[in-house]
Length: 333
Ligand code: ISE
Image 1 (tube, rainbow, N blue to C red):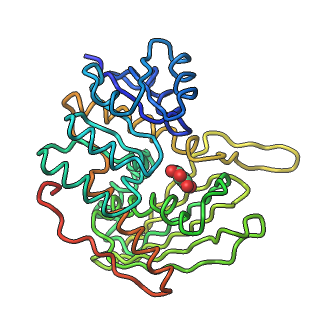
Image 2: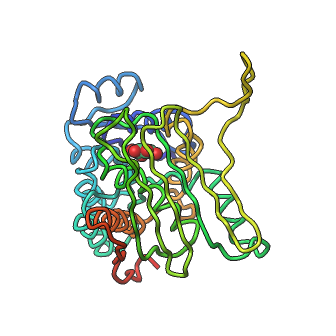
Image 3: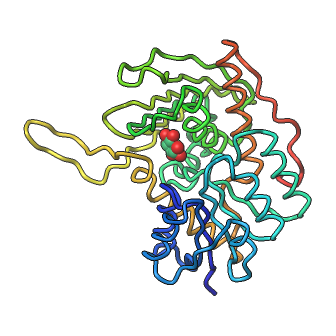
């Protein structure tokens, strides 16, 4: 049976998901689209062929033909739409963050618990990246020993103007908050933030250096720099008692030319994490058709947003700040 997926939001990420659903996601197909910008949605539906164009997100979610939903609309709409999917008892893959406020994240959690089924997966796609997956396995192997440090670098050359110093944390470093919890398989309990001076090309936005402490005493460092003009560059090294494991750069080919010997660097995350996005959709679709559950749960989405909130408070106060998650509901155990 082919899973009929409806897509809400046809912007940068929505278009990317649409492309994957049209041929690269076995067992699933793009059946309908909605975007607040009807011209944009119309263009995507026309390009995709036999894809229905819906007049509202609610109409798409409620349509009997649509079996599952990808939410790729603006962050401020995520919670409301995720709850609508839960109420319609339809599985949803919701782009990160789960919601910009903790209140909204808690509302999604409450709705899911009330409904009694885990229906929402949060689109933290790095969990599906082959490199991070190997890191997770290797870090857990006896021979590597217990993790001590996780060093992360997140550089991005294509940050739009609306990305403020705060959004460097809440929109970008939030990926590291999630992947650190995934790799270490434990909670992060405290956060400190240090701002570097702004690069002269983007004077309104400061690069952030974030230090997190895990429940068992692992230290996580994150350099989040969104104006690295040379390209999109994500690095990670997990230092364990008996050795370290690093993410290999995702570069299929080398280039020698004009006195240089080097590698091409991806322009943005869609190229760097292309495999992760593809595998994410494939495994999400398979999980709906009876496969094992995969990816970040609503609890993980809430935890990442809670770490971001604590980091923003640490930044504002200039002080180390505790991450207060509260008890994990048994529903997410
Ligand atoms: C986006 O989701 C990413 O994956 C990028 O790594 C990040 O830099 C960007 O700010 C996010 O919107």
